[in-house]
Length: 494
Image (cartoon, rainbow, N blue to C red):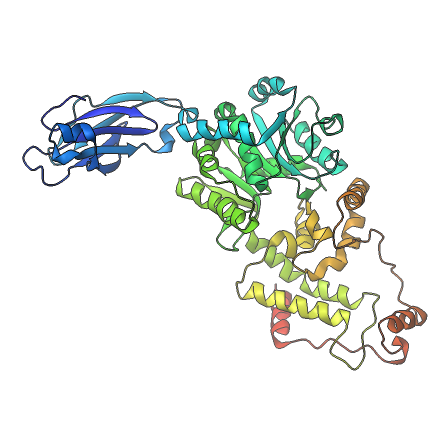
């Protein structure tokens, strides 16, 4: 330390500018340090931290130190000039200004987390890993894909997705949670597809963290970074037009869908980042500060939601290709068609009661309509899955919608019809996925017959449900609620 009359700019280290300062004319009060980088005021700090060396020199009883954390946007590998000015004296501290050049890899937390991940999480990197970096540097597009399953091999839908991305110029780094190293797992690799195995903890954000730590030095050289997971089946349609739409959006971050549940955020199963994000340390720092957690609700709050808020607060722009408002509006417009489909289901009503399968579906649709109109958000990839695919060209289907239907979405009955319009390979992939992974639901892949249900079939189904023969009693008409009638009038007016 070097003593002067008002302080000293000691060093720029570990992401912070450090030193000490006092006002010789008034040592009772701590002084304020204004921080200027490249001629721009970026913040201030108070010189009131305790330091033993200052105590020994009898300077403010030791309470005159300061440490200012330099904003992460300056960790870009470029030279910058930092000037520390004592506000009360209106003059720079001795040895100020200084120059510094940092990259995101210089962040101590990132070094620590990278070493921790390699030690505690990574089971094995592909033997071909040394081939990945030259390819990424040449192609400048990287997709980090989180996968998790206990099967001894990857399934056809995994292969289709990674190979589709590879054909679009992405190097695909699969971070797989679960399973032991084997030739069967490694067979998914190709020229532009590489595999890392990790312990099965922490959900997608922890897998993406491993991918980002592994490729940290490459990120500033990228034009595009894609984070995705294997919760999506597809692509149902060609991804090239989708990628063109993403690039044409002229924004820093693009998600396919967004959500207002908990707080506005882009849903993280498919996130695209442009050059501005890749060259900024913001994403890496967010990942480094993200805590490992196996509680799904916390992961959504601290991962999905917090990432969007973090990047917005850092000044980045973002967009959803299929925004919630547009998707919800398209679904509302399709409600009459949805109800007509319910009425046409080959399932008899239960005459003389308020029960019955069709009635329960209509009540569920009515409740969702009320939620949407009243502004209560729902998950668009579940509740509006069929509208996304059939009316908006969405290229994926969430496989938990097929095999679990966790939200009890009433349009599940449309799975057959929608899949019959999908390419045969998609139906084959879904059948394979169902056989291997299972689930509480079993989607039927054969289209419903177009002919009307015969009295004999209705009798058989009615007897099965303990109902009266259908052909003896007219079908009870659906009683449209005033709210539904108002909705349909609005839709018709459009």
